View (cartoon, rainbow, N blue to C red):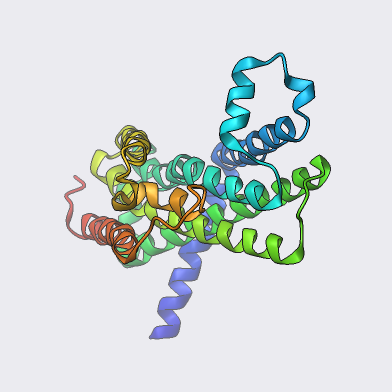
Length: 263
């Protein structure tokens, strides 16, 4: 029985994966994730060679704010940007994977398949996580290449390894926040509701961080985990709130698929 369930799950994952790869979303998100190393690399270049940008007053002010001077601060900033940008890119992926069933009017046909609804939901979340990690690795590799081309200092093996671990940690925290987005895609039966929710969470997290309440806001926690603030601002309650929201989103999505009326 367990082997049969795993086979069903594997089949669902493969189907969802093919739908994603064949869609324009894969191209859009892959291009969008390139902005992460591009933005950080641009600021790092301006910090490395400020004499070439002395006439750009506004950009110079941004340069001083970013303070990217070596590999440690560079990778820290990459982790912060993936934490903020990931809310949008990973969230958009989740909204498409769940919302397209409504916009394409395939929901009823999907539910008619001899597969448990929980299995379908789980397969969708696995594909979201898998694609998000692939995008993140792509961004990280581009970031490492850009940092090497810029000629950053302090690139010891330990610094690079620690930076990569921080990046993976921040990426994981951002990915698990995709579950509430999936629920709003189901609740709104399309793309608009989850996209509005994503924008709200980004604004809310930035506002909370500015008011020093970021450690209590789940969507601000991944960026704070990057260490960009210069000190550890997170506590056990921060992690509990983040995973609490993630689990709540997962449960709510599964419950919606089980009990909602799709007529």
